[in-house]
Image (cartoon, rainbow, N blue to C red):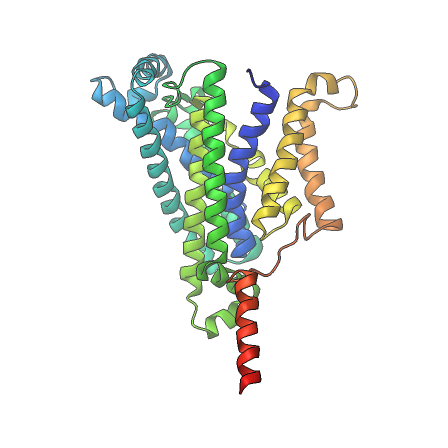
Amino acid sequence: MEVPPLLLNILINFAVGLIVTLSLNLEVGYAGIPQFGRVLAVLVGAITAGAIPGRILAAMLGQPCGAEYAYHLINYKLVYQINTILAKNPLLSVGVFIFTLIIAALLGAFIGYITAYPAIRLREAYLGITLLAFGDALQVIAWNYEPLVGATEGVMVPDPFRCIGAGPIRFLSATLIILGIAILIFLYVERLGRSPFGRALKAMRDAEIAAKVFGKDIPRLRAQALMTGSALAAIGGALWAFYVGSMKAITYNRLVWTFWPWAYMMLGGTGNNVGVLVGVLVFSTVRTLVYSYKSLLAGIIPISPVWLEYILVGLAIVLIALFRPQGLIPEKPALTLPRKRIEEIIRRISSSEKES
């Protein structure tokens, strides 16, 4: 049974969008950090997938693995050879996949640690602009420095999904795997939000001075939030590069990887992971439909469909901020224990008071 390409596009956009938006929600919704540079960590993950596993495999084959690896006339042939080997070796494919995600997470966490320094000293708009500048700076470097990921030509990325098959079965399998990883990350972030660490982040967000009074290390909390969020976002960037099979820096722009996740989060509900899931599902569906049917829209709307995505994200953010700032599913107080457990404790206390 062949799955419609439109459904696959919606699912993969939803899966990767969920990972990136959950990482953003951890920093913005939980910690209150104005993260306008989400593209930075996503780009780090994509660069990791485009620059590291291919070079390691090329070195194992005795092929060029230095700066010349990123030269497009060499890169395409090398990656084709690597993919031929990966197609016949599932164990190697799994190893490359897991190794790359781990390295991406570590490098993403390192970038989060670096960005924690301005987060200690700057607040609100100044911090947001600084993080935004960091993301743009890395994109410019990757877009112009060829030895990294091929500059304007980009690089092909080794395909760990090739061992499953080619054509539609490859994209279906890759989509389901990435969707499964997105669900696991959702469960992880949901659990993290209910942990003492998540409650400390919310305390810092709501009343920083009070959190300090109760002994919370605010700079350390900010750094931990940025490192965790950046690690998750880098995993999302690496997964997207693996899925599309190439890495070109210009495709990792602030609209797609910063402002759209903000719109997802604001629509669903800042600080609420379930709301984020709903927001990503709604917006990714609309985005995919607009992109898929833009040729039909050209004869209906008075503007070019190319600009419709930009208009939608700006309009969505403004309307949500004006009429539904809390999102579709507002944040609710998180219970440290299940409700039934709390009710049981209350009943025990009440019964003990009556006996006394």
